[in-house]
Image 1: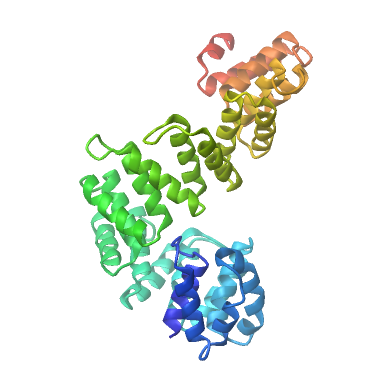
Image 2: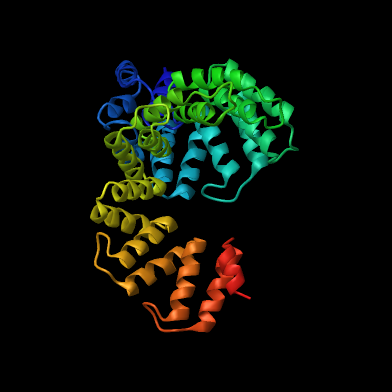
Amino acid sequence: MIELLVAALVLDFQRDQIIGDPEEIRETYQLSCAEEPLACLALEWGDGKNGLEAAGKAVAPLCEEGSPLACLIGGWAVSDAGKPEIGRVLLERACDGGLGRACVDLGGMYHHGHGGPTDPALALELYRTACAGDDARACRRIGLLYQQGLGVPTDIERAQEYYNRSCDAGYPGGCNSLALMLHLGAGVQRDEPRAAELYQSSCDAGMIPACGNLARLYDEGSEAIRDLSKAAALYEKGCDVGNAIACVQAGHAFEGGNGVTADRARAEKAYVAGCDGGEVVGCSQLGLLYLSGGEAGKAAEVFDGACDQKAGGACLFLAGQYVEGNGVEVSLQTAHEYYARACDLGVPEGCRVTAEDCKKGRGVEKDKELAKQLYFRACSLGDEPSCKKAR
């Protein structure tokens, strides 16, 4: 029963980026409640990832009393709350208490250096123990180590072997990793049709990244596999389950009519979801959509927020609005400030215009020496017109 409960918790909190059936998860909690008090608590935590913070607080006393399951949940919660060093300690307690899932997650922390230094050798040891016990997720992790050459010599053949083992055992993540290898031809012969099959099976099992990978294959693959209509549908599906990058791609599809009928309202909705989900490219695209639709004031608001989130392109676009008085009052000084921010964020045009401002005293005091330095920077970022002026 404990294995079923752990599997339900993993799906509930989306620890493997897999969307589970809420009714099935709740049914597992109800069935486990008589044997495991934590299952009873789980019925009160709220929905999915949003309930993890409450769960961590609820189980903290039980972890202190020695419950491995409580320590596992607590480890997830504090790690997601920005305290991975405490999460590592709690997962170690859960692993020492015999909870296999905790050992795999602890291996992940050593693998990626979350909460402390990396230790690929220890990660491999934890993964191998779990994989030998038929933990398909751990088998996939071993494949990653061999593909990346971390703690072991790079060995693509063995990586593929472990991905196959994980996939054959029914873990969607293993199928997704194998598909990605075949999709990109990463050390193996490229096989787009087989990659599409594997992505599809993983996507059907609820794995969010697999749906996005399949969409990209249909969007950017060879002529034989490309299908923009399928790509758009998958991007929208990914957006519906909270994948911000998929939202941006769905917005592109609806704005440009790529594989679907062009639909500005649906493009806006997708860009808003991507922007709200933390994908600043979505914010910039939303601003451009507003600009093209004559809603310059709304565009300025969106660009300003995206610029604050270090989207250099958004800073550049907003600077242009201040130069032209488009949706905002004309202000060469404010425009200069936004061009300078774009430059600081690595946008070559921002550096070139900031240099011109300094050279001409436009919105700022003249400073020919600073202008020359900015032209050099713009040139180093690939701006050819600036290279001539930097000499």
